[in-house]
Image (cartoon, rainbow, N blue to C red; front, top):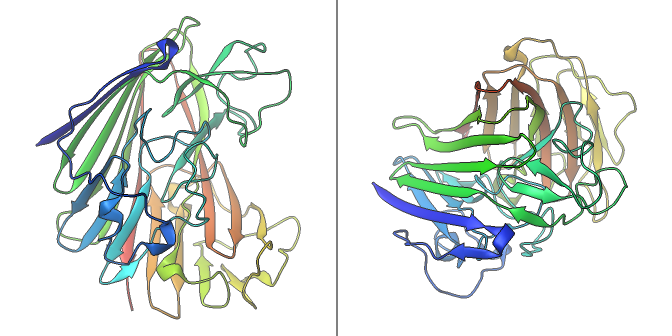
Amino acid sequence: MRVYWVVQNLSALAVAISAVFLSVAPVRAQRFSEIDADCKQAEQAAAPHAVISNGLVKAVVYLPDANNGIYRAARFDWSGAIACLDYKGHSYFDMWNNKNDPTAHDSISGPVEDFRSADGKSAPFYDDAKPGELFVKPGIGLVRRIDDKPYRFQTLYPLVDGGKWTIHTTANSVSNRQELKSQFGVAYVYTKTLELDRNQPILRIQHSLKNTGAKTIDIQVYDHDFYRLDNEPTGPAINVRFPFEPKVAQPFKNGARIDGKQIVYDRVLQTGESAQGGITGFSDSASDYDFILEDSHTGAGVEQTADVPLASITFWSVPATACPEAYIHVTIPPGQTGHWTIKYRFFTK
Protein backbone atom coordinates (compact mmCIF):
# COMPACT_ATOMS: atom_id res chain seq x y z
CA MET A 1 0.00 0.00 0.00
CA ARG A 2 1.25 3.48 -0.87
CA VAL A 3 0.86 6.08 1.85
CA TYR A 4 0.61 9.86 1.51
CA TRP A 5 0.66 11.89 4.73
CA VAL A 6 -0.50 15.44 5.09
CA VAL A 7 -0.20 17.02 8.53
CA GLN A 8 -1.49 20.56 8.76
CA ASN A 9 -1.93 23.00 11.60
CA LEU A 10 -2.95 26.33 10.17
CA SER A 11 -3.37 27.96 13.54
CA ALA A 12 0.39 28.17 13.62
CA LEU A 13 0.51 28.76 9.87
CA ALA A 14 2.82 25.82 9.56
CA VAL A 15 2.48 22.72 7.46
CA ALA A 16 4.74 19.71 7.83
CA ILE A 17 6.21 18.80 4.45
CA SER A 18 4.83 15.44 3.48
CA ALA A 19 6.55 12.36 2.19
CA VAL A 20 4.81 11.66 -1.09
CA PHE A 21 4.68 8.26 -2.72
CA LEU A 22 2.22 9.15 -5.46
CA SER A 23 2.50 9.83 -9.16
CA VAL A 24 2.51 13.64 -8.94
CA ALA A 25 4.37 15.19 -11.86
CA PRO A 26 5.89 18.68 -11.42
CA VAL A 27 4.49 20.06 -14.66
CA ARG A 28 2.56 23.21 -15.53
CA ALA A 29 -1.03 23.40 -14.31
CA GLN A 30 -3.47 22.18 -16.93
CA ARG A 31 -6.42 24.18 -18.14
CA PHE A 32 -9.25 21.89 -17.13
CA SER A 33 -10.83 22.07 -20.57
CA GLU A 34 -7.76 20.27 -21.92
CA ILE A 35 -8.39 17.12 -19.86
CA ASP A 36 -9.17 14.22 -22.18
CA ALA A 37 -11.56 11.33 -21.65
CA ASP A 38 -8.98 8.73 -20.66
CA CYS A 39 -7.57 11.01 -17.95
CA LYS A 40 -3.99 11.03 -19.30
CA GLN A 41 -3.69 14.81 -19.09
CA ALA A 42 -5.36 14.88 -15.68
CA GLU A 43 -2.67 12.48 -14.43
CA GLN A 44 -0.12 15.22 -15.09
CA ALA A 45 -1.84 17.74 -12.80
CA ALA A 46 0.62 19.58 -10.58
CA ALA A 47 -1.66 19.36 -7.53
CA PRO A 48 -1.34 16.28 -5.27
CA HIS A 49 -3.50 13.49 -6.61
CA ALA A 50 -3.90 9.72 -6.87
CA VAL A 51 -4.77 7.62 -9.91
CA ILE A 52 -7.06 4.67 -9.18
CA SER A 53 -8.48 1.98 -11.47
CA ASN A 54 -10.30 -1.34 -11.34
CA GLY A 55 -9.59 -2.21 -14.98
CA LEU A 56 -12.99 -0.85 -16.03
CA VAL A 57 -13.09 2.62 -14.53
CA LYS A 58 -10.14 4.97 -14.17
CA ALA A 59 -10.20 8.09 -12.00
CA VAL A 60 -7.83 10.87 -10.99
CA VAL A 61 -8.63 11.92 -7.41
CA TYR A 62 -7.29 15.15 -5.92
CA LEU A 63 -5.87 14.98 -2.38
CA PRO A 64 -6.30 17.53 0.43
CA ASP A 65 -3.19 19.66 0.89
CA ALA A 66 -2.99 23.06 2.64
CA ASN A 67 -0.10 24.28 0.48
CA ASN A 68 -0.61 22.81 -2.98
CA GLY A 69 -4.11 21.31 -3.02
CA ILE A 70 -6.29 21.96 -6.03
CA TYR A 71 -8.98 23.29 -3.65
CA ARG A 72 -8.31 25.36 -0.53
CA ALA A 73 -11.54 27.32 -0.13
CA ALA A 74 -14.00 27.20 2.76
CA ARG A 75 -17.11 25.63 1.22
CA PHE A 76 -16.54 22.05 0.09
CA ASP A 77 -14.88 19.11 1.83
CA TRP A 78 -11.25 19.12 0.63
CA SER A 79 -11.26 15.35 0.10
CA GLY A 80 -12.90 13.46 -2.75
CA ALA A 81 -12.66 15.91 -5.64
CA ILE A 82 -12.30 14.03 -8.94
CA ALA A 83 -10.39 15.62 -11.81
CA CYS A 84 -11.44 13.00 -14.34
CA LEU A 85 -13.28 9.68 -14.42
CA ASP A 86 -13.31 7.49 -17.52
CA TYR A 87 -15.42 4.44 -18.37
CA LYS A 88 -15.27 2.92 -21.86
CA GLY A 89 -13.89 6.12 -23.31
CA HIS A 90 -16.59 8.31 -21.78
CA SER A 91 -15.88 11.12 -19.32
CA TYR A 92 -18.14 11.75 -16.31
CA PHE A 93 -16.40 14.47 -14.26
CA ASP A 94 -14.25 17.42 -15.27
CA MET A 95 -13.76 21.01 -14.12
CA TRP A 96 -16.96 22.72 -15.17
CA ASN A 97 -16.01 26.40 -15.02
CA ASN A 98 -12.27 26.59 -15.83
CA LYS A 99 -11.59 28.93 -12.92
CA ASN A 100 -8.57 26.99 -11.68
CA ASP A 101 -8.46 29.16 -8.53
CA PRO A 102 -7.88 27.13 -5.33
CA THR A 103 -9.48 29.82 -3.15
CA ALA A 104 -12.71 30.19 -5.16
CA HIS A 105 -15.66 28.48 -3.48
CA ASP A 106 -16.75 26.68 -6.69
CA SER A 107 -13.41 26.01 -8.39
CA ILE A 108 -13.72 22.27 -7.95
CA SER A 109 -14.81 19.16 -9.84
CA GLY A 110 -16.38 15.81 -9.18
CA PRO A 111 -18.88 14.60 -6.57
CA VAL A 112 -17.82 17.06 -3.84
CA GLU A 113 -19.69 17.55 -0.58
CA ASP A 114 -20.64 20.47 1.65
CA PHE A 115 -21.45 20.15 5.36
CA ARG A 116 -24.20 22.44 6.63
CA SER A 117 -26.10 23.13 9.85
CA ALA A 118 -29.02 20.92 10.91
CA ASP A 119 -31.51 23.09 8.99
CA GLY A 120 -29.26 23.21 5.91
CA LYS A 121 -29.18 27.02 5.92
CA SER A 122 -25.90 27.73 7.68
CA ALA A 123 -22.63 26.01 8.61
CA PRO A 124 -22.11 23.73 11.63
CA PHE A 125 -21.89 25.84 14.82
CA TYR A 126 -21.70 29.08 12.79
CA ASP A 127 -24.73 30.58 14.53
CA ASP A 128 -23.17 29.79 17.93
CA ALA A 129 -20.03 31.76 17.10
CA LYS A 130 -19.59 35.51 17.51
CA PRO A 131 -17.55 37.49 14.94
CA GLY A 132 -13.92 36.47 15.41
CA GLU A 133 -14.84 33.10 16.93
CA LEU A 134 -14.62 29.70 15.28
CA PHE A 135 -17.09 27.35 13.66
CA VAL A 136 -16.62 23.96 11.96
CA LYS A 137 -16.58 22.69 8.38
CA PRO A 138 -15.93 18.92 8.40
CA GLY A 139 -13.47 18.05 5.67
CA ILE A 140 -11.96 21.54 6.02
CA GLY A 141 -11.45 22.33 9.70
CA LEU A 142 -11.93 25.16 12.19
CA VAL A 143 -12.94 28.33 10.35
CA ARG A 144 -13.25 31.89 11.66
CA ARG A 145 -16.49 33.85 11.52
CA ILE A 146 -15.62 37.30 10.20
CA ASP A 147 -18.78 39.38 10.82
CA ASP A 148 -22.32 39.38 12.19
CA LYS A 149 -23.90 38.57 8.81
CA PRO A 150 -25.61 35.22 8.10
CA TYR A 151 -23.43 32.42 6.74
CA ARG A 152 -22.55 32.82 3.04
CA PHE A 153 -21.09 29.78 1.28
CA GLN A 154 -19.33 32.01 -1.28
CA THR A 155 -17.18 33.66 1.41
CA LEU A 156 -13.55 32.65 1.95
CA TYR A 157 -13.70 32.34 5.73
CA PRO A 158 -10.16 32.11 7.16
CA LEU A 159 -9.07 28.58 8.01
CA VAL A 160 -7.48 28.53 11.46
CA ASP A 161 -6.86 24.82 12.03
CA GLY A 162 -7.12 22.11 9.38
CA GLY A 163 -6.48 19.30 11.84
CA LYS A 164 -4.42 16.28 10.80
CA TRP A 165 -4.97 14.51 7.49
CA THR A 166 -3.81 10.94 6.90
CA ILE A 167 -4.24 9.57 3.40
CA HIS A 168 -3.87 5.96 2.22
CA THR A 169 -4.09 4.83 -1.37
CA THR A 170 -4.36 1.45 -3.05
CA ALA A 171 -4.69 0.56 -6.71
CA ASN A 172 -8.46 1.09 -6.59
CA SER A 173 -9.09 3.33 -3.58
CA VAL A 174 -8.21 6.53 -1.74
CA SER A 175 -8.96 6.89 1.97
CA ASN A 176 -8.85 10.35 3.59
CA ARG A 177 -8.87 10.66 7.40
CA GLN A 178 -9.12 14.00 9.20
CA GLU A 179 -8.74 14.36 12.97
CA LEU A 180 -9.86 17.66 14.47
CA LYS A 181 -10.20 19.07 17.99
CA SER A 182 -11.48 22.40 19.23
CA GLN A 183 -11.61 24.32 22.50
CA PHE A 184 -15.41 24.69 22.38
CA GLY A 185 -16.45 21.05 22.66
CA VAL A 186 -16.45 19.98 19.00
CA ALA A 187 -14.08 17.23 17.91
CA TYR A 188 -14.28 14.45 15.35
CA VAL A 189 -12.51 11.84 13.26
CA TYR A 190 -13.79 12.00 9.69
CA THR A 191 -12.95 9.26 7.19
CA LYS A 192 -13.97 9.42 3.54
CA THR A 193 -13.01 6.55 1.24
CA LEU A 194 -13.44 6.49 -2.53
CA GLU A 195 -13.31 2.89 -3.75
CA LEU A 196 -13.88 1.40 -7.18
CA ASP A 197 -15.66 -1.97 -7.14
CA ARG A 198 -13.26 -4.69 -8.19
CA ASN A 199 -15.64 -6.20 -10.76
CA GLN A 200 -18.17 -3.56 -11.78
CA PRO A 201 -18.16 0.05 -13.08
CA ILE A 202 -19.11 1.34 -9.64
CA LEU A 203 -17.58 3.98 -7.37
CA ARG A 204 -18.49 3.93 -3.68
CA ILE A 205 -17.87 6.90 -1.42
CA GLN A 206 -17.97 5.64 2.16
CA HIS A 207 -18.22 8.10 5.04
CA SER A 208 -17.52 7.71 8.73
CA LEU A 209 -17.83 10.64 11.17
CA LYS A 210 -16.92 9.79 14.75
CA ASN A 211 -17.88 12.37 17.38
CA THR A 212 -14.94 12.57 19.81
CA GLY A 213 -16.09 15.84 21.39
CA ALA A 214 -18.58 16.91 24.05
CA LYS A 215 -21.24 18.44 21.76
CA THR A 216 -23.71 16.64 19.50
CA ILE A 217 -22.91 17.00 15.82
CA ASP A 218 -26.26 17.71 14.13
CA ILE A 219 -25.73 18.45 10.45
CA GLN A 220 -26.86 18.12 6.89
CA VAL A 221 -24.45 17.23 4.10
CA TYR A 222 -25.08 17.32 0.36
CA ASP A 223 -23.27 16.07 -2.69
CA HIS A 224 -23.05 18.74 -5.39
CA ASP A 225 -21.94 16.23 -8.10
CA PHE A 226 -20.88 18.66 -10.87
CA TYR A 227 -21.54 15.99 -13.49
CA ARG A 228 -20.08 16.59 -16.94
CA LEU A 229 -20.98 13.72 -19.24
CA ASP A 230 -18.57 13.80 -22.19
CA ASN A 231 -18.51 17.62 -21.82
CA GLU A 232 -21.98 17.70 -23.39
CA PRO A 233 -23.72 21.08 -22.92
CA THR A 234 -26.81 21.02 -20.72
CA GLY A 235 -29.72 20.74 -23.13
CA PRO A 236 -32.01 18.22 -24.89
CA ALA A 237 -29.38 15.46 -24.80
CA ILE A 238 -29.31 15.56 -20.98
CA ASN A 239 -32.08 14.17 -18.79
CA VAL A 240 -32.32 13.44 -15.07
CA ARG A 241 -34.62 10.68 -13.85
CA PHE A 242 -36.06 9.99 -10.39
CA PRO A 243 -37.94 6.99 -8.92
CA PHE A 244 -40.70 9.38 -7.81
CA GLU A 245 -42.53 12.21 -9.53
CA PRO A 246 -40.54 15.35 -8.70
CA LYS A 247 -42.42 18.51 -7.82
CA VAL A 248 -41.25 22.13 -7.76
CA ALA A 249 -42.83 25.20 -6.22
CA GLN A 250 -42.09 27.28 -9.32
CA PRO A 251 -41.56 26.00 -12.88
CA PHE A 252 -37.98 25.83 -14.09
CA LYS A 253 -36.78 28.56 -16.43
CA ASN A 254 -34.81 28.60 -19.69
CA GLY A 255 -36.36 25.56 -21.35
CA ALA A 256 -36.08 23.04 -18.51
CA ARG A 257 -39.22 21.28 -17.31
CA ILE A 258 -40.50 18.24 -15.44
CA ASP A 259 -41.89 15.49 -17.65
CA GLY A 260 -43.30 12.68 -15.52
CA LYS A 261 -40.43 11.36 -13.41
CA GLN A 262 -37.65 13.23 -15.20
CA ILE A 263 -36.20 16.67 -15.85
CA VAL A 264 -35.75 17.44 -19.54
CA TYR A 265 -34.57 20.42 -21.57
CA ASP A 266 -36.24 21.84 -24.66
CA ARG A 267 -33.10 23.72 -25.65
CA VAL A 268 -29.46 24.17 -24.71
CA LEU A 269 -28.78 26.52 -21.81
CA GLN A 270 -26.89 29.61 -22.92
CA THR A 271 -24.07 31.47 -21.16
CA GLY A 272 -25.40 33.09 -18.00
CA GLU A 273 -28.55 30.96 -17.91
CA SER A 274 -29.52 28.41 -15.27
CA ALA A 275 -32.37 26.07 -14.46
CA GLN A 276 -32.78 25.39 -10.77
CA GLY A 277 -35.13 24.89 -7.86
CA GLY A 278 -35.97 22.82 -4.83
CA ILE A 279 -37.52 19.42 -5.51
CA THR A 280 -40.08 17.59 -3.39
CA GLY A 281 -42.20 14.50 -3.92
CA PHE A 282 -39.81 11.97 -2.38
CA SER A 283 -40.56 9.73 0.59
CA ASP A 284 -38.53 9.04 3.75
CA SER A 285 -37.28 5.76 2.23
CA ALA A 286 -33.64 5.49 1.16
CA SER A 287 -34.91 3.94 -2.09
CA ASP A 288 -35.93 7.42 -3.28
CA TYR A 289 -32.28 8.46 -3.16
CA ASP A 290 -31.82 7.16 -6.71
CA PHE A 291 -31.02 9.54 -9.58
CA ILE A 292 -30.05 8.69 -13.14
CA LEU A 293 -28.39 11.31 -15.31
CA GLU A 294 -27.93 10.33 -18.95
CA ASP A 295 -26.57 11.83 -22.16
CA SER A 296 -28.73 10.47 -24.99
CA HIS A 297 -26.30 11.83 -27.56
CA THR A 298 -23.18 9.95 -26.43
CA GLY A 299 -24.86 7.17 -24.41
CA ALA A 300 -22.98 7.91 -21.20
CA GLY A 301 -24.95 7.69 -17.98
CA VAL A 302 -24.61 7.42 -14.22
CA GLU A 303 -26.93 6.24 -11.47
CA GLN A 304 -26.42 7.72 -8.00
CA THR A 305 -27.86 5.94 -4.94
CA ALA A 306 -27.30 5.98 -1.18
CA ASP A 307 -28.08 3.93 1.91
CA VAL A 308 -29.75 6.83 3.75
CA PRO A 309 -32.98 8.77 3.12
CA LEU A 310 -33.16 12.20 1.56
CA ALA A 311 -33.61 15.31 3.67
CA SER A 312 -34.09 17.61 0.68
CA ILE A 313 -33.05 18.04 -2.96
CA THR A 314 -31.89 21.15 -4.76
CA PHE A 315 -31.56 20.87 -8.51
CA TRP A 316 -29.10 23.25 -10.19
CA SER A 317 -27.89 23.35 -13.77
CA VAL A 318 -25.93 25.74 -15.98
CA PRO A 319 -24.59 25.21 -19.53
CA ALA A 320 -21.62 23.15 -18.31
CA THR A 321 -23.17 20.92 -15.64
CA ALA A 322 -26.41 19.49 -14.25
CA CYS A 323 -26.51 18.74 -10.54
CA PRO A 324 -29.15 16.94 -8.47
CA GLU A 325 -27.91 18.02 -5.02
CA ALA A 326 -29.11 15.47 -2.47
CA TYR A 327 -29.09 16.48 1.22
CA ILE A 328 -29.04 13.98 4.06
CA HIS A 329 -29.44 14.65 7.80
CA VAL A 330 -26.95 13.16 10.25
CA THR A 331 -27.16 13.47 14.05
CA ILE A 332 -24.18 12.10 16.00
CA PRO A 333 -24.14 12.26 19.85
CA PRO A 334 -20.78 12.35 21.67
CA GLY A 335 -18.97 9.03 21.44
CA GLN A 336 -21.06 7.82 18.52
CA THR A 337 -20.20 7.41 14.82
CA GLY A 338 -22.30 8.24 11.81
CA HIS A 339 -21.99 6.21 8.59
CA TRP A 340 -23.33 6.72 5.08
CA THR A 341 -22.38 5.54 1.61
CA ILE A 342 -23.09 7.01 -1.81
CA LYS A 343 -22.77 4.75 -4.86
CA TYR A 344 -22.22 5.74 -8.50
CA ARG A 345 -22.91 3.18 -11.22
CA PHE A 346 -21.52 4.22 -14.59
CA PHE A 347 -23.00 2.85 -17.80
CA THR A 348 -23.06 3.37 -21.57
CA LYS A 349 -25.52 2.48 -24.30
